[in-house]
Length: 291
Ligand code: R5P
Image 1: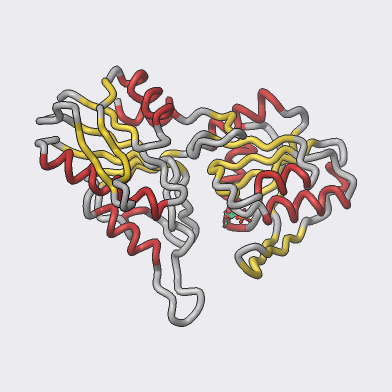
Image 2: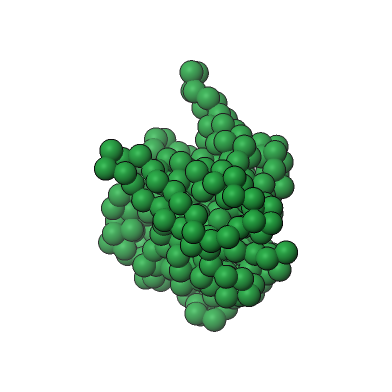
């Protein structure tokens, strides 16, 4: 069956790399806003009996969801055999329980929305801390891919004598895997989140690692408070300036600049969300899953 890869606005580079890697053509669309702010979607390619892949990372999801929904519905109305959503960053995964009375579980509501219009989903390191599998909330087939081998390879190649540091106990399984493949020791911190932009981090005794390069590894860098707090502790302990590695470069507001100012030697992310810190390419990982 013929495959066409469609880029939602802002996802053109990744869509092109994926299409090239799997030997597919790019689909053509017009996606724009009407003067009143509503979304216009038109599909120019012939998609009848075609497998269609919609590439749309979901940082800032509220504004992306409707164009994606309209594209998926339009592709189906034009006879596409299936619509596969490639969302390297999947939003709303952190709202996975009722934290305060009166709240809902938005990760579920978001999952039901996506499951209502896409046939399958491919994503990278979704925030599955309290959930064990995507099937607990998504009713469509989901492929979860992991950036950890690519991060280990980056560390092996670019960081001398690394010490990996995970942000919290939940990250231990993941960080230990990255550390093992990077031939590096690791430690895991105790973290308490006090508010949207306030976290408290306890760094265990790091003095014995004074001649190591600390490498902070986290799945999401959002406000960057987790990393900044950790960098502050490492600075106070007179450690070598750390390398900060995140899978998903969410970087809310001035987070990126704040993290740079905190004394991080280098900030490195995967290109699951386009950002100037992207150094680790995940397009081949996705393409391999599509072949
Ligand atoms: C939380 O459990 C995640 O793994 C990250 O540690 C968190 O999302 C980082 O958020 P922030 O950059 O806002 O501290």
